[in-house]
Image (tube, rainbow, N blue to C red):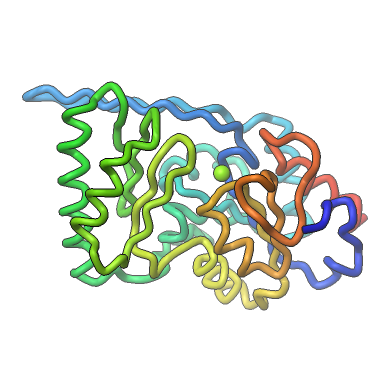
Length: 261
Ligand SMILES: [Mg+2]
């Protein structure tokens, strides 16, 4: 791994697409989820940090020079709400860890899930719901189309037992990111999704750069022409940022704007 400051113009001369993770890269980490179910009502609240005006401005400047994509575990609805002002030119939203891509007014599902995956997802979610029922103060689900995201106050070991029981074939991943478990079929990940987007944009995967800070970013950091980690203790890549670990995206944008002047 090399520090980002060693990136040169020569390294990015063919670059067309720059992809950013959200939590911890473009928006500060920290999500609280609460779901209160009674016999006749369900109340759901989510509280997250906002996209700052400075980050919005930096992303806006960057999309004047490159295609820019956000690639996150969040739902498409959430990402559309948060990044709405940056749509639609040169700006794309990949949601649910690579399952959907919002591109030019169309929400594309990157691959269809076979029935066997869908049935397995139901069983896993069902068992997790029972677990949440036993520990409601510690865990709750975030609303998603397919990706199962269980927010928890600690890495609950029973979650791995539930995975073992329902997925002995190990067709699903189950990643703990420090604030939640993300569970979905392995056939789709962030790496596959940026290959999908590059193809849609008619560019080569070597013309892409991806940045992230956690285990669910590993596949896209490896797939992209240039991978940058903003948290080198959690995930490795070609380059690492050295400054603000809470919002490493700034360092990347500043470096690219400086090199592409
Ligand atoms: Mg992250």
